[in-house]
Length: 392
Image (cartoon, rainbow, N blue to C red):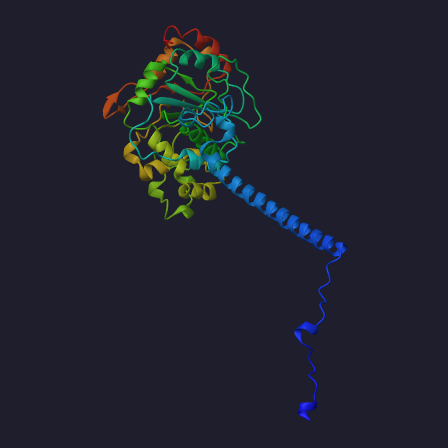
């Protein structure tokens, strides 16, 4: 039986060939699908690539802007000069887009190398805090005349205020990015730190003196410059008295970080060297305590820096101010002097008002370099004295 069976499978030669050629319509469809697929993949890759590029671009640009803020360093410079070394060590344009946090971080950087790679001439930075105009700008212009390269000027005003000064004034173009300030609040300390931070961006600034629109100089520039640049100490009023205006403002919630024995009071019109200015600017721990606990009616501008320096840098501070103020009349504000008060004897009395002052470890009769508080009417008689008693 098995021998009579015929094979069920045909030989290879007998299997018909079913591989018909593809029709032109089918080839065209497959090609189109491939083309669409490749295009979709390409476009997806392009979109992802642009997104990644933008992310990294924003990251690196944000980091670079901390060191070289484009709005600060690119104004008025050529394409090759916008990132040059000169603009880094001495910004030519004070306006920038940094936040206070970014500004403080940038300004508190300290070079590790002791040698400066440029000809550094120490300068005094004059920090003016005002709400509006500077009535004594003509007096200060005359004070600074002929001493370019030895000073820098910075002005903190209301955010939208524009100083009305001539282009040849030392105050022209010297406004910094500012914020609203309220008397007796922590915002005054914020403004002080903002002024310090902007001034610290110039690596040649060595001394920093805080002034107001009602301040005047009582000596000429060479005397002020030599006095401050050659001093081994800074000049921040710092003392303790058991009165409601000092001891009574202490908040025990500041302990244990700040105790009553460490609490100090003083005039806000400070003078700091560069080292102390950086340390004050970099502090956040004790500043945060004042922001939280020194209110209301605490006046942190009269306590924060005096207390901070006393706690950590007492030996570097003279515990006195170089700005004369008359508190003899009592009240929350000092005496104000107008045109009728301005005489040569009055200016000389301010100069000779110091008793028991020390300068570099030795007694001195020169205690005050500046004075306040003066009314705008005092400008004319003061200008008349610049060639005599004021000697500028």
